[in-house]
Image 1: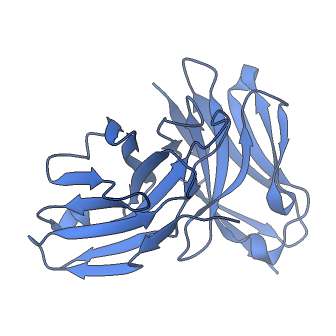
Image 2 (image 1 turned 45 degrees about the vertical axis):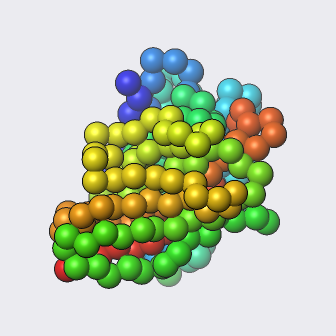
Length: 114
Length: 116
């Protein structure tokens, strides 16, 4: 069975500081991994995806994530936080990118301090 | 960029009533999904749909739920007799056009369902 664990339900960083949101996954087969972002009262927007190509994945808005099989992790980072990054971030796993359900983590709310 | 659209954005319904949530997936996509997010909780998978039939459903998707693709563009979720605990945000998603492998699911903005 697949699962995703996000460490920290709430992360607060200063504007300009490094953002690090942690995600660990469990999967019996090589997974597809995603990070989605949800702004208040909006839907889920894909930030980036890992589909067994490069282990360092670059996404939109300056975010990137690194797939580390040995650590079963897929942490999300951004070198310099911006006020507009405040949102809920969801790590997710799927067996295949189509025709398969996505299992979401419980989410991490990112707050940015001025 | 094409997007998944959902209507209505907010639905208020009396307990016991039937409700239909509507979605228009991206036009060349072949796989369709419904998820729900109870306030303050994680997003949960409900059902996936392909080739006019359910591919997979979760334990949440019991007999009160049904899905349908009534025409070439709409994808609906029906809740037959709503309960208070059905109050949630419901998201529709789609993926899988040509060269489907590696395509992530695209989500709509959701329908907030409030059961009174």
